[in-house]
Image 1: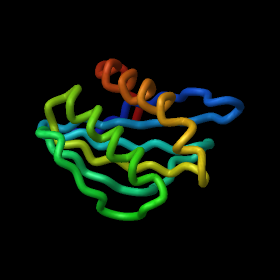
Image 2: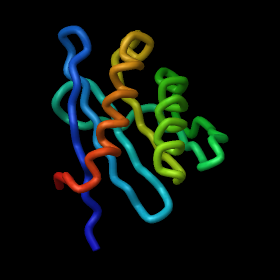
Image 3: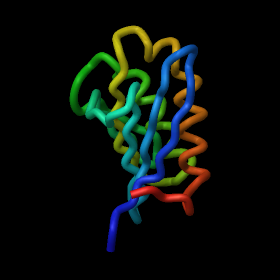
Image 4: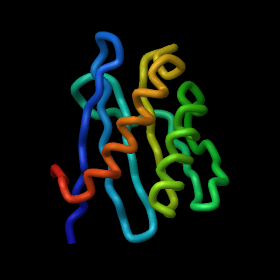
Amino acid sequence: MSLGFTTGEARHEERKLQGAVAELDNAVVAFFWEGEGPRMGTLTVTLPDRSSSSLLGDRDRQLGLILGGQLAALTGKMALVSVNLPVGLGDEAGRTLLELARGLIGKEGEENG
C-alpha cells in the first residue's frame, strides 16, 4: 500500500497557495501553505459529526477548523488539517482555500506522489 497525495494550487491576489490531500479509509489528511515547499502549520482535527478541536498552534486555527469541517462533510471521514500561512493572510484567503480543498477532494483519481 502506498499513500499518495493529491496536490493543487490556487492564486489569491499575487500569492500562490498550495494544498495536498491524502484520503485514508477512515480519514482525510490535508496540508495547506503559501509558497513552494510544503510546511506544517496549525493543526486541527474534525470528526465526521463536525465536532472539532485545535491540536497545535493558534495563528490559523479558525481557518483549519473551517477547512476540516468542509472536508469532513464532503467525505464523511475524520479530517486532520494543517494550515501554514503568513500572518493575516488566512483571514483574506479563506474562500480561495475552501475552493482549493473542494477541488482536491474532487480529484481523487489524480494523485501525485
